[in-house]
Amino acid sequence: MKSGERLALAVILGLGVVACGTAGAAAYAWQRAGSVRIAIHETRPGGDELSLRLPGLLLNAAIALCPIPADAEFNARLHDVAPALRAVASQLDTIPDVVFVDVTSEGSTVRVEKSGPDLVIRVASAEESVEIAVPLGSVRRLLTKLEA
Amino acid sequence: MKKILGCLVLACITGGAARASASDDRWIHVRVDDADGAGGRVDIQVPIGMVSGLLPALKGAQSRGSIRVDRKRVDLDELRGYWNAVRTAKDGEYVSVRDDDSDVRISKSGGFVRLNVDERGGGSRVRMKIPLELVDAALANGDTFDFDAIGKALAIAPAGELLTVDDDDSHVRIWIDTQPAAAREDRP
Image 1: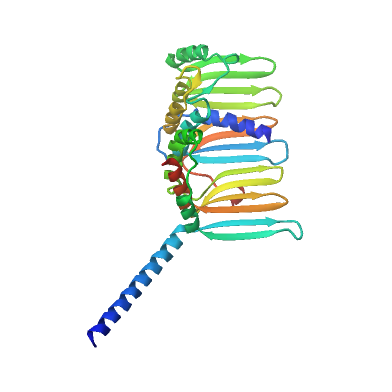
Image 2: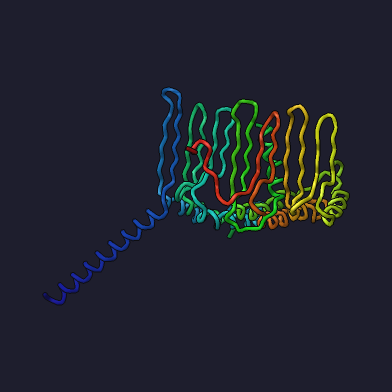
């Protein structure tokens, strides 16, 4: 094999390794970031049905890119609650799956729970049910950003 | 629902007035059941460590550092004076009132202040057991509640029952446990 061919082969192999590595890293990051789920179901006949599943990476990117409003009052309030945010963020990962809040009133139910890697909010009434699941990692990123 | 919310406010204040001895893996539970037959209920459970962290945040929402108590209704200086007298006294029953409507007993024993109220004729029944350190923390800061101190007192509170209230409108229970409870409809 000529030296030029060897060089071309090396370049191709190098690009292949880089491409595979990038794809693997992206897949890992994609899987690790989890996904945001939003499901809305109207119980009436012909009611709307919405089920949305977004990669957590998009939410994480939005959290990273969106600026915190430069509002003095907001920042002062944020400064006050920062220790609380830190406390919540540091504990969410370590606690077991659990229902934090479960409220039932007049046929409606609101539930906030930790389920696996997600923080899940469920609202159910006679007319509709809504479920929102957000990866804890994204919640932690948001809390950390707000605290910073 | 207003009753439930009212009970929740009571629960937060009372729950924030607990004492402890263990670590942050304990949970504080608040349970409110409407007794009007409509099935309304509230279940809240949060790790103590998280509550201790969250309590100081209340100061930001309430005039930077505290919640003011209406001095027209509660003179905290006077209350603090009574409390200091009770705090340093021996264990025993300090208040016992019996009338046509109810029996009220306030006592101190085993590091707790205990309040028992029994209304006659099947009325309300209240059992409250508040750690002394928590009352200390609640009354430590002028005419305001010191949530930092309450959070620290709560962080060392022992497991056990803090409050139960049973009346015609609702049943309220606040307690500290070493583990979270399963959601009621999820239980076998």
